[in-house]
Amino acid sequence: NDHSHTSPVTEKHLTDGMTVRELCSAAITMSDNTAANLLLTTIGG
Image (cartoon, rainbow, N blue to C red; front, side, top):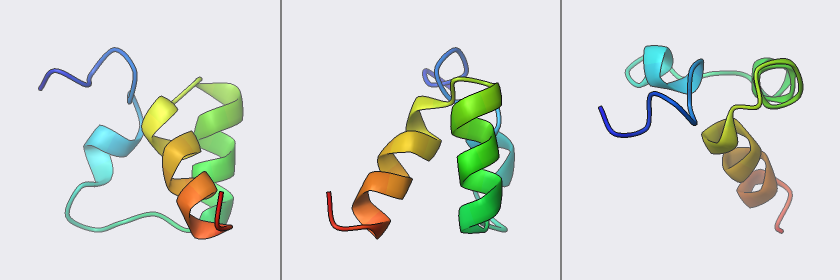
């Protein structure tokens, strides 16, 4: 996967998804860029 360096958490949840809380945690604690992007999409950003 080409995103393993920027999406260390979300790449492991491609089939089961993640809650907003989990996305926040991944974005903040693991610098998961995909999580941050999904959060922005969720809030309309």
